[in-house]
Structure formats: structure tokens, C-alpha cells
Image 1: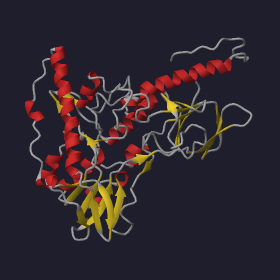
Image 2: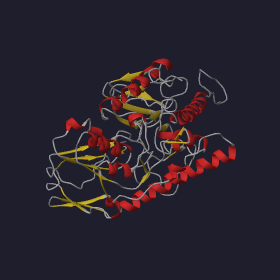
Image 3: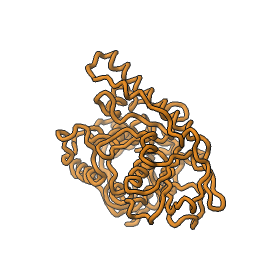
Image 4: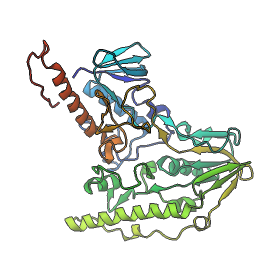
Length: 404
């Protein structure tokens, strides 16, 4: 199908300029890729579960675009999309002029607008930045750092800051904490063979659960007990601020216990899979032993005087929100969320890609988005067949669906 791809910056720009310097993919290179192209600069013979750096991932996107001949126009920002009046299709206003299109695919993903909760006022500490603005420890002024958010970004940044010699506080909310490896297999492999990447509906209450997993330093299981033993002081969910004092919810032990429960549940499911299929994978009974909670978890700090603790920086690893302000069509529900099924929206001709749980658990991951892309492409092809009926190109032709 004739099509164009509009990109406001360079290909994979966010990987290059909006992530910290030491970031690597959270899934191994053999898994987190597109079909038909492996990472040429990640050697599986050196480490079978090697993780690509952020620059390698950005370069991979560029290479893949070249491989498939993607008609990408870089440096073109879309400012608005509106349905045309009295004519089919949409008028797409861009920084390089208008474009008319019969179909529009919003493939911008879920990470558009950094979210910083309005808790700590400006000026309360010298530096407050979102994780998308964090690069390395040297970027921050001398002093202690509070990292808010214990997903993959938060725990990796907190760990890096602590290793640089900083005093670090880590605010831990509800999370999922899978084992990085178990019985000789990466957790991405376990989710695959257990059918969990293909789950079509998230578990109750798990639509936006934070996942704490890391590919840093060759990959390791995120363990809050180990972080505490290394000197990171754990606190509960950041709740409020008043006159220089931050207050935390008394939920630290609960949050860690719930994360532990999900961790252990995956191990049990893996053990059952091994037994059921008679696989020769080494047992790891020690992986089921969590050890006692640190004292700071059983009796957590509920208040933090920022000045007294020497906190000069707060890194908000609190995620992102979507931004569809440019998409001025009837494709959203009353809460502003895309009203869609498998990427096909309620506004005929408008589609979405790359969103969490678009059709399955893997929908927002590098390796999984192409399942949804194929479905969307087939749907557009079918619609083009209907639109061609009776035209000079296809006089009297019946609408059909073509496979790529």
C-alpha cells in the first residue's frame, strides 16, 4: 500500500536523547527485536542473553527502516489531524505543510508526556527532573537524591546513583517484580512458553502495574532487599509535602510483599511447566528463598526533612501520559483514552499502534507490536478494497482483503 511515515525528529529519537546514558534494553537482544533482522552488534556467543544498549537499539531501528524501505520523512511534526468536510479522509497539518490521507495510524506509543505529580513545589530542592531528563550522576548537584518510582527506570537510576557514592532514597509503590533468569532461562522466555505475552486481558487491577526488571550490568533480578543492603533507603509511596517535609504512605512492606508474591507465582508456574513437559532444566530452590525484610521495611520512614537529609535532587520516575491533542477526531472515550479494538478506532479510518494491552500483553513491546501492525494493515487493505469498488481502477470489482 502506498504510505508515508512522519517522524518529528530522527528515527528512535527518544532512545537517543530522552533516556539515561547507561540504559540498556530490559529484554535480551534475541527477543526484543523485529522479525527478519537480528542485532548485528550484540554477540550471542559472548552472552546468549546479552542486552542491547540504547544507542544499539536506535541504530537497529534505523537499519530496519532501511531494510524494509520504509518511506519515512524525518523532521516533520504533525500539528493536527481533522476529518475533511464533504470529502473522504483526513487533512493532516504538519510543520512542512498539509497532507491529505484516507487513513491515519497513530503509532506514537504511550510515552509522550512525562508525568510529575504536583507534590513538591518548584524551589523546594535545587533540582527536580523526570527520569526522561536524567542522564548520569554527574548531572546532579552534590548531595542526596530521592528517586520516586520503583519500576525499571526508578530502580536502575537509584542503583546507579548509589554506586556513584550518593545517599539515595527510593520511594516504592505497587509493582511487579519478575525474576530476570530462572532455571537457565530469561523471564521473557518464560512469559512466552507460559503464554503470558499473548494474554489478551490484563489481570484485575494490573492494567498499569509498574514492572521492575533490569538488563543493566548483564541483567539481574531487581531485589529491593539487596538494594537496601547496598545502602538505598526504601520508603513507601510519596504522598504529600509540607514546609520542607515529604511524607510517605505506610505501605512499603505491603508493596514489597505483593511484588514478592508475583515473583514467586511466576517461579511456581515455571516449575509446573518444567515438570509437565519433562524438561531438563536445573532446579533453583534458592530462588524461592527471599530472606527477612530489612528493618527499614518493617518500620519504614514516614517523613523526610529534605534539607536535614541533604536532599538536593528529586528524580521522578513516575511514567508518562499519552498526548493526542493533535488528533482532533472522534476516536476517544469520555476519559480521553483511545476508543479502539485491536487498534481499529471508533473513528473510521483512524488506527492506533504501540499502546499497552492494545490486543495482548506484548502490544507495547518492540517484539510484539508487529502482531498488531499486521492486523491494522490487513484492516486498511480491506477498507481500500471497498473504497475501490466501482472506480476506474477497479470497475465493478468486489471488495477483497489482500495479505501482505
